Length: 61
Image (tube, rainbow, N blue to C red; front, side, top):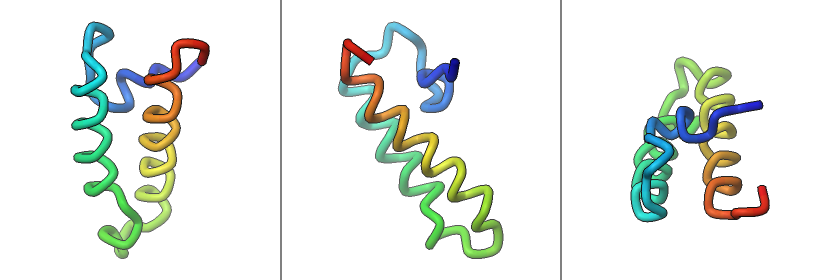
């Protein structure tokens, strides 16, 4: 199982606002268009950050 808090660089006690801020920061950092020299790694990290952002706000996931 993936630790989504770790993907976003957060503690488990992080607020929803912290999750949102971290997501936006990392999504900009790892967007594939901003990393043309390392596109494959950027795509993997960008997808992981997006998945973490979808899962953490949903208490059922």
